Image (tube, rainbow, N blue to C red; front, side, top):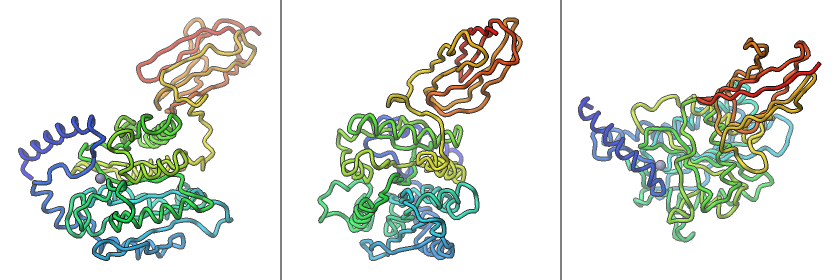
Length: 407
Ligand SMILES: [Zn+2]
């Protein structure tokens, strides 16, 4: 597009974005300008990824020994809906943790597909993350939930012109065929010995920022809120600066209740399923689909404890809301003492010890850390008696405390 109109669209999106953030309960995702030429070109070309491309990709993915592709039903126009199951069944049999992903509810949000395809690539790869995930988990993925809409060049709807993202509150018998198919498979998988633990719904937003749609405590629960925050922060931690915090929210106390697949999970299974919509960037500047996929895959692994993560995210059931640095304990000490602090957000942390003349005697921490409560043991066996100070820097916070070594 011409530069002037491009700037105009950008400005329009900025305006839309600022209002969308406040009215998130309506719907954040979609194509920025449905009257534009870009829209017409993209929609007439299946948004760059059509049903034929999916069939081709499925045929490639099926060559992997870790993939099974099933038909789970049909759309309004009788297109087959496909479910991929990814797991490494050659490894010892155990109850794999189940992860659900579906993409392309809204045809115009093809970036959700790019991220999903990158996640599939990781799961089939020889990376340690891919291997670990397909050994410890079973992934159920519907890569294209709305193929009719994709082929018809719709931005959001299916062949009946219904938004199948937000009509899950319709009476079961009257719902759209695609919704029926998904609801049926959700219901079946939730009765498995290893039911779905994480369910991700892949979209992209006119907000031109990557984020998860967080569900507020109002309408869910404190515990559910904590689980969501922990997951979102873990994903963000794995893509520094790439993904927004959890301030894009929906409350299920209002009109949004029960209309989404996520609310189906909440009202039927409460905290047992972490169900979230992810919004990539619906914009020409969208990129880093591989980085995003890696962060999400890693976030799933951390959330499910696959790598045995040891960070304490929450203490006494709550997430820290403020920074705190405690007095070391014991104090005075000889020769070891514990320094404890809490971070409200993931950030870089530097924790160093100095003598009374300001000379650095130890670097205890110098790395990015997840939010939560952290503690570190300081061993002063090589130092002589005296007063020392420890200084912690994170973000724009600098805090210093004194401690006493008595040998
Ligand atoms: Zn969407």
